[in-house]
Length: 132
Image (cartoon, rainbow, N blue to C red):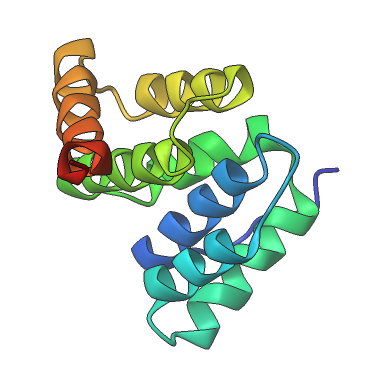
């Protein structure tokens, strides 16, 4: 693919990462598109920058580009958002798990950091505890 250099803001880098995660399992559903709208918060320029990267770069090219456009705090927040997107349907598909691992490595996050986030998201998404 290649496609030359793309310019990203931290918000468009987050949106690009989200696009790759949403499509990792081969299906992008309506709820994921709504999640993407929440991420860009109406910022059309951020969405367009992310879409350009999504259309012109391979996933393995995208990951380091996203990483270089985020500081450490933004990387931690991004991995939390990606985990939440991936776990939104109640399970983590193998493709999603591999992509999360690649982002975690590129973001230089410890396994403990990622495990802690996974645990919190699992609690957040466990609506069965409200069933009687």
